Length: 362
Image 1 (cartoon, helix red, strand yellow):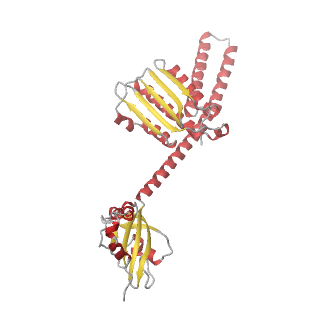
Image 2 (tube, rainbow, N blue to C red):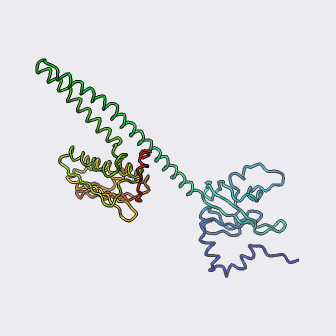
Image 3 (cartoon, rainbow, N blue to C red):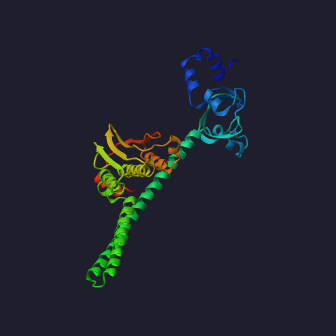
């Protein structure tokens, strides 16, 4: 009695014509592992991806996954979960490889030939290692984003309390002491002492304003990035007389997306801090401009520069990188000894609305 040829027999018959054919090219280049096995789980044919993924060989047997190896069976039930439950489209488990380690995989099966006890099954494997790494990276990025947002909210709260609470209290004390001093008729020495107290209070008030500004400048929420950077540069020029710091912008909207504004401001703040502290520069330029659909930030100085390896080890670089990653942008730093440093940031240009600014720190 003539039996219909199995799928594998037809595959072998057509093998020569398929060797350079379209089907064979697809089979060989698929990223998923493709395995055809018989009823005893002996491998009849497999594509290169399956070999690379598992290390198994044609003629060897496909091992059961970690779940199927230990699952309880009903009498006469197939051990392979996917073959026992054919209505299940796919299954996630760990597969043992030739190296003896288990790899997380997504598996699906299809019975492509069945005649009595004879059976041929197509097994498709997807390596989930990269997918898991991508998911871990996504979660890590999300955690970092939420951490930075929490920090910004706390900075905003502290800045507000310093400005409205401590700052105002010190100012009231200063006004009160000045009023007392104006009515005093004691000797000059006591008046001079009172003046010293007033001067110290004024210094404390200025320090409070500076700390408040560094924590979270009010102008960032109220006016936007450009006025805030202008104010930052102006203040640094006053406190660092031996350095000329310039800021210029071109084709940039008054308001950007709040997340762009705070992250770009932190990058500028960090870059200027590093340049003033380490570069020995006499000129620092900050340039912000729109180029196509991108926003470009350039910060360059004429300082002593540094070696590239030292850049990536520093906390300053890591902080800037974290901020740029939050904007899904790119960060490039070029520096050479005695030739200065150049920082270039590119992000997608996104304008903001006035109504957005209430959530700038979120």
